[in-house]
Image (cartoon, rainbow, N blue to C red; front, side):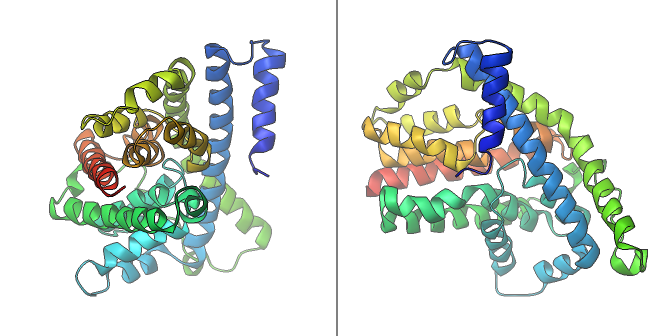
Length: 322
């Protein structure tokens, strides 16, 4: 059972019972999507920020920095950061608090972006559900290519030396470690964790609402049939178009699976389907709006550009192979 099912029930109750919207209408889909995603992502952000406060207390980010900046073979630190993204199955928005923690601890920007790219890109669907849907060959290739995008994207961002485009607003406050705070009662410690988690969540939340609102409008008023009709072609332009369609949307990988099955069932090439899904879960307007709070538009554009190019190349390769 989906752990977010109670939130969906609440969104349904508000949309269809309290407000009285007709189920299936464009406006109902928009309102329902907005309520569900604001509550779900808001709770995820709060929980993740709370957990990050605990992690920072017992395992300061400085230690993570030491691990991720230790001299190793060429590219290994980027691969380790990307693998950390694999074992933290966050969506594109909820991986941002850890990104902020990495940046604030002085972890190199490229390594931080390797995590930010891989965390939503290699997800529970690509690891556990793809084998049943597409077979092991597609599953292994997709995940390997996802790691490659994350590692190469991080290395390129690091080489471009873009640290000047990081904004300091959310990075000024460094959480105190166990040694700095000393021994304090558990009750006060939990209160500290909650206050730390809430402080970052409150700063991000307005941007989350704006981003989800834009995504909800697109989700509610752009019929799935339009996407299916345009992407069913086997022309070269369908892969970039799939990425263009997917980038403004926001959803986790599991919720995109029914759309992927529908597209594949209508004859849309596999690479085009994967490019569409990957753009949705890795890049989104809510993510862009939240990230704009901590970085300048130049860095945001480069991050999106590198990731989009990687997704398009992946789509073409999968269309060529399969």
